[in-house]
Amino acid sequence: MPQFLTTAGTSHIIEDIIIRAKSELVLITPYLKLSRILFERLTDANHRGVRIQLVYGKSELKPSERQQLNALTNIELLYLGNLHAKCYFNESTLIVSSMNLYEFSEKNNREMGIVLTRRDDGECFADALAEAQSIINAARGGTPRTAFPPTDLTSAIPATQTATSPTRKREVDQSLMVQRLFEMIQQLPNTGAQFSIKTEPLSGQGNKFFSTISAQEYPRSGVNFGFAGALRFEFTKSDDYQAVKATQKAEVERLLGGSYRCFWNKTAVSIYAAQNYEQLDEATTAAYFLHAIKCVAGVLKGFPLPVRTGSTRW
Image 1 (tube, one colour):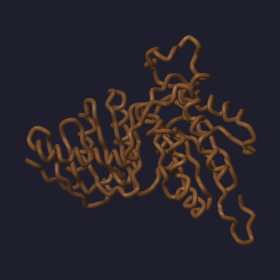
Image 2 (image 1 turned 90 degrees about the vertical axis):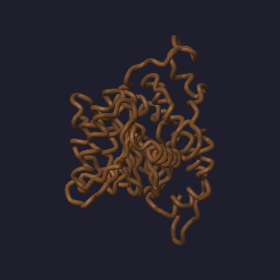
Image 3 (image 1 turned 30 degrees about the horizontal axis):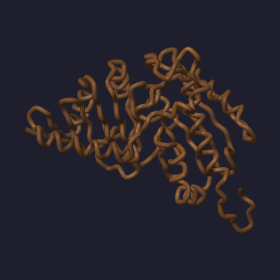
Image 4 (image 1 turned 60 degrees about the vertical axis):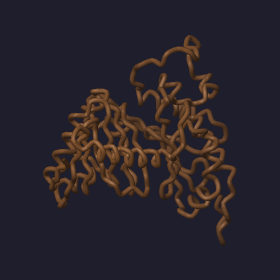
């Protein structure tokens, strides 16, 4: 039967769910700021080959937090703006709780939770799984994701690798991939922007490094570009963002063609790799993200925003 927990028990069960995950782990939390211990537990799960789905909402992650999570090779990181549910489960155990995966909550808040097991609470467990899947689908945009169009990758795939060749099972070197992407961006015509690349040691990951790309005023005045595991086009003015979102969102997502996950949040458009996209090598992965950059930049450059009184913006 279901088990009731207070704060300490809730925190313990969440950690135990991560520790005992064998192949699947789902974490749904509106507010996300992982403690060092929970991040280490997720890293261990990632090394075991556990498929991790983490849905968060309310506010964007800090760049350092996003870098840490994107370094996990088996994670699907999703954002849902109206998320308020908190639910954590693996193959056998599920907890519905008031507790966010937020370090402050673990140490300071009064929390409670209800634990279900697949064996003893089968019907309720199944209902909770169905609702969790609905949340995941909503976070993905509710549309099926297809593989990246092969024609867009032709120039990046080595001649010895054909379309029917099996995907190479190795971890892509993120820093090398970003360097390739940075070189490709430099070849884009008439950008007029100064792109910079930065490489830093990845906290808690030994000798691993994480690289990012940024540029001000790209692809046009009032929009800044960044790449840190995902593409980000951030507007300096909220009303400019709202104008683009209201009229150009469908066009951007049509051009991306379901080969990416596109999120419109506050004042930024963020673009992640599709869940079922297989990373072949650094050059191919860089070409994959370059394609998305071209799609979004083309739309933003061609969309005339209203001219404000006394202004010559855009």
